[in-house]
Length: 171
Image 1 (tube, helix red, strand yellow):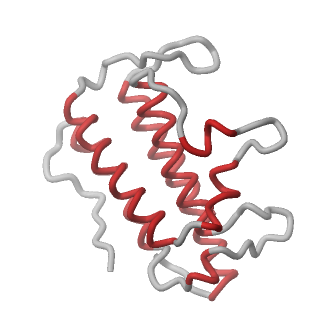
Image 2 (tube, one colour):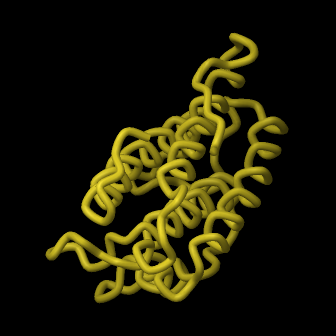
Image 3 (cartoon, helix red, strand yellow):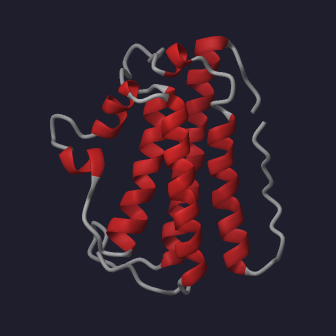
């Protein structure tokens, strides 16, 4: 069972922010525990065909890539995000049903570990290399807070999907 805590080991700002992001990530992983491979690929919401457990986990993985690697570090889009179009804006969710959930979770954890290092190595006031939509360059603090919000919001989606699939609630 995934161990989670939202209580940081120290009270400085960086540790608190990193702890809350890890807590949100761990919650996403915990919501996947015990789900069958078949259920992980099902989309139980009739008007949301991409809303699968695999799709949500893959989305979280690639959202972190976008905010840390692309926006903050100035790197290039990679993976399914590089294939996004107006007609297919969320390819990371579409292709996820062809990838085993265990693999998606392992990739998400591997990437999370790399980004933990990035957060530890940069000052929270460091500006992103690329601007956001309004032209401003956010700082690392904003990126972390945004990812806490994004991951937590999708944890709510994981709750709904999981309950519809097998009745499990409360993680």
